[in-house]
Image (cartoon, rainbow, N blue to C red; front, side, top):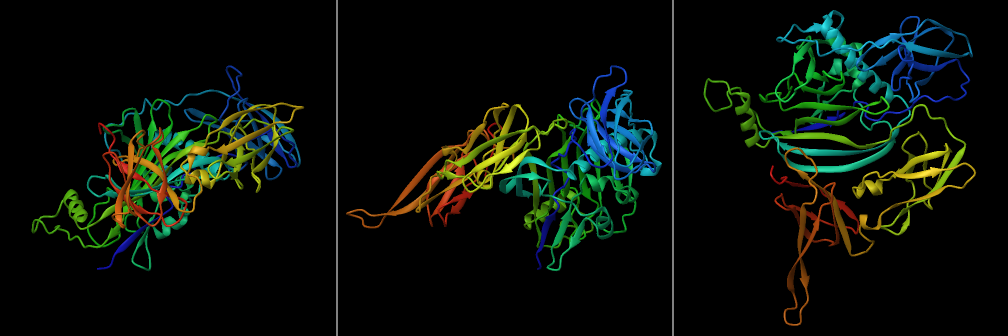
Length: 572
């Protein structure tokens, strides 16, 4: 029987890494620069999303206001424009009409009246009628407007110059019935720029669907991102309703959506959940409306989730995300389930039989471990900051490391001698850090350190991968590094004991070929990370955390091998 493989293409690409903020700098083209302030107190408003709209209402530029309420917007051409200020939890505010001449730098003080939005007053008495976007009721429109603001900032940020980030990415196999993790491969990935994920266009998803067959009999499963959710294509193909929070969702209110036409390509339905008290978007969960593949599987285990987070400067990121799909389909499940003739199987019975026949859930996902916080109002300074990056585990300079300041968009790459130079640094105390694929392989978090830059002095700083973070170079042994995770939710388990064992052939005067069992024990650190060194090559190694599953690995080269271990948290 043919095996259908499932491939995740676009793991919930929701504009995870944001940047590209305003700064007061000379700009050659026509610009609007100014400050947004509270109309009652005249206090500056930081983190407001300031939009430049042309005379048709089309957005031409956007930026988050800085710590002092400052903003700079570049117009594509001369003309008549209006500013709009969007803030989560407050009604949007419009400016006066601005006539911008060619090459003009217009200075504008944007005074906005504060009008809080009250989601606490929205009552949900039952499952209301699902309405198209152009025919939303008053309560639905208010809720959608708060969601739209967060999604718009997220989508905008993905178009800007990025910031430094480190994410943990995983590929997991879960039980179809218990959802426990049965196998996991986790890796850290750092970068400086946009998210590595990207969804298909809304037009493509609408035409070809969210699940598509491959020529080899497999399927591709797609997620969605903020840009897709905001698109006219998506809004025109789905209807919306306000939904009541269920058990475990205290303080939330939902905006549910579902496809208008279920006769077309595979679509999705789900809910965007918002905090009633803060008006902030918390998470999106969705499932596929059907599975266009052999068998009679329920759709409930398969779908995705994105958890949103608002940063201090007003940026929005997806903090945590996953996409679940069938791992393989090597069976055919009939409508009755083969259990009670003439009586249709329940979804639970169907899942149980599919699990017995080998079906598991394949989950791809990730979470942000670190993200830089760019100061949107900071000017580039006149100073340089130099230094070196060193790999103490190999006793050599670390080339091609990305060195950056966490508070402003200033970065540089280290050369073959590990040297770097950051230009355009302002005077004051900053935080400096670096990312590198070697540090990711070793499971090391991004660790910023403070540095003070003073005018008229030479400032240099040395950065390094610590000596104890990896194994020394040898030709006969290698190392194993990874994280110990909880089998239920994948959270790291700190302090757990990890034991490795292997057999080696020894030489003795009386027994020339006597085998000897060797064991090594280490403890995971506070992040759940463990490190085993002096592991022999070409030998079967068994590694297990206390109370967890035993994994087998064989090192074929003198380097570091990543391995994720699964266990049960004590008391869980």
